Amino acid sequence: MEKMWAGRFSKTLDKQADDFNSSLRFDNRMYKQDITGSIVHAMMLGKQGIISEEEKAQIINGLGAIVKDIDEGNLTFANSDAEDIHMFVEAELTKRIGDAGKKLHTARSRNDQVALDLRLYLLNEAEEIGALLKELLGVIRDLAAAHRDDIMPGYTHLQRAQPVTFAHHVLAYAMMFLRDFDRLGDAARRMRISPIGCCALAGTTYDTDREFEAERLGFLGITLNSMDGVSDRDFCVELLNVFAILMMHLSRFCEEIILWSSWEFQFVELDDSFTTGSSIMPQKKNSDMAELIRGKTGRVYGDLIALLTTLKGLPLAYNKDMQEDKEAIFDAVDTVKQCLAVFAPMIATMKVRSDNMKKAAGEGFINATDLADYLTKKGVAFRTAYKTVGEIVAYCIENGKVLESLPLATYQQFDPMFAEDLFEEISLETCVKKRISAGGTGPESVQKQIDFITEFIND
Ligand code: ARG
Image (cartoon, rainbow, N blue to C red; front, side, top):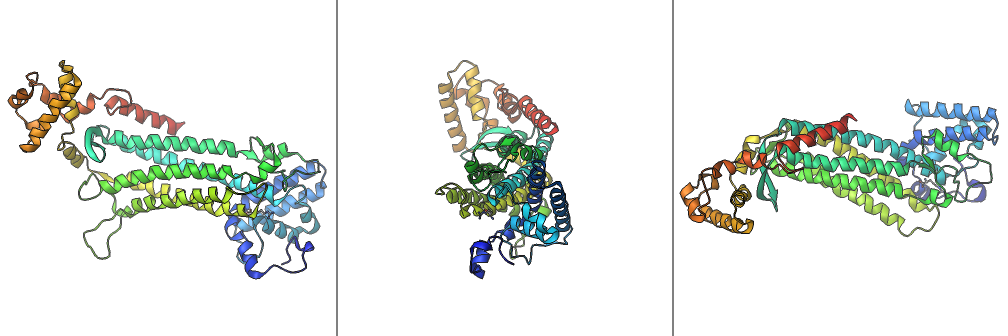
């Protein structure tokens, strides 16, 4: 088919160059947004008297029929040689309605058109990803509620540090995902500004109504500088940044699930429907889904860096380099959606082995801080108490003992302030219950977190 811009050229485009140049195979996913934008553009052109009412109606009807045909599979992109989705739709329209179709592109350019389509498309995707995040938060909340008082070792440096509840541990991730949700909304708010009407770069000589178009399309306002409007892709970068952080959170959670489901930990057991076997080792049950999500995190970081790098040297205004924005952001959108869709049911169905967690918490001098606190509350300075407990731990290790089973008489050789009540003080249950500070692992704080998430979900 003849190119729309053929007028200035005496030769046709080389076949390989044509394929190389075309973005239709990946930007066709924006067909709905492209057509919605064009319908509103035609409405505006009609309202302003730039095209006739008759032409406006023909264009709007034609576009409506095109979107229906694509939706129903009666019009496909497969054999089209259109340069992109914008050209595809316009050519199809003109094929169907004739001369009126040729008026649609008055007072706009593909440069503002692509900026518009991408914003509309990504706003929709951001909403869907927000809904997936909410679902995930619900799963974490349920996990926390079901294991509110189940004790596990809390780690620092991957060494057993202090007892925490499983609820407190997973709720830490809920807080991260809450912030991701917030960041998503923040990025969406800045994205909700309309570039349509910026035209190629400098605006237009027609008396257009950009506000009308923006309002009809659900935007909060219009870009105030036309060169910025067509050159700006920081809304994509911001979204990629949100995705990169979200994936980083998912990846850390996955790493823990991989560790926890190892034979060494056995804190959780993933459901058969979310694990795979080995082709050679019959005993294996691999946490492939968690590993894949961890792996795909690298890919989303790559998308972010790719776009930042693409943009860094571009002079104003539009440059073809910017067509590269789409594959990066689409890949990240697809990846994030896939990961969230698999991760939530994976953790919803995993078995939590509270017995093993409790056992692990009882084996590693995890209550040593509480023993030092015990002495401190009896009047011993914390540093002195800390040193004494250090010596007791060393003694226990040397003699194959744990704090719970060391006789009181032995304790008293280290400090006469020790009394029978120390054993109650260092029981794991007490250690957790007495962590009463705000935001700590104590039951009141954990319940408060659960309520906070519930309120957010129901909002
Ligand atoms: N397919 C192009 C893109 O994705 C659309 C804009 C093309 N504009 C132009 N002047 N070549 O960036």
